[in-house]
Image (cartoon, rainbow, N blue to C red; front, side, top):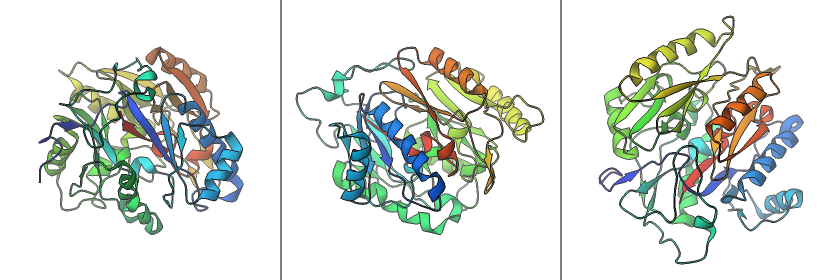
Length: 368
């Protein structure tokens, strides 16, 4: 079967123009128990309100009553749509599809890389409709709920096919178990990931590193994989890259760095940084330190995987997770410098990280 690379598809960078952002409305009491669910829903409302002026927002809901309840909270908006697709949990970054775009087709409007944004008019303007499947495709990874950790979450593996009943895009299904939060690309041939996750025997015991690199090359259309070794403490995904290091432009990476030598993340993050610097030689990459929020925990789970790297780049805004920690203000200032033409929206994401994820984990971009 032809791969995305064979057909000139690639996974675009997150800062490239979006058609939409997809989210799943929270419903799982095991992830967000009754004492926290109202706060989690408030986080969702803030995200949707920030996103909807710059792109469509699809919110997956279990039923029409859920849609009506959400609209009662924040009103009806023409750019917010509610497909009725049942989900067990909210982590659409991981169980949802990864979208790819066909390089040979003309873009729908002007796009600017890195710190710049696209005019809203380019994707909400009237004119010839986008032909389904002309430019955009969908990769459906196999999903085993983070190495068979949560049997009930495997039900969310149906979501990409359900979404595609709406989108009607060409699909690709590689023979690999993976989550979207495990990969990060710059749209120009580079991919970041971790050994702790993708080489874990609870995902793909039949695949070695070279096999996985070949698959990522064929399906994301990347030429070089940069492998970090370790994730952060408390991360039940076995070390997703979106809690560690992210591209913010084709040649800039923000990388999480713990500044307290007594913190349990300190040594592993220092080692990752050393490896990243070594791998980056000759690639013209600037590595920008991103502080950690420090120790964020709750009584039930202990240390939680709080990270400022779990931000989300949308058309008009960058959603930055905050954790009521001293470094919050410092991080907002850093993101303002990194994205001078986007609005920086800080969202207190401690309720989300209660469920072991944050803003990037609950969002999935659909490119324009």
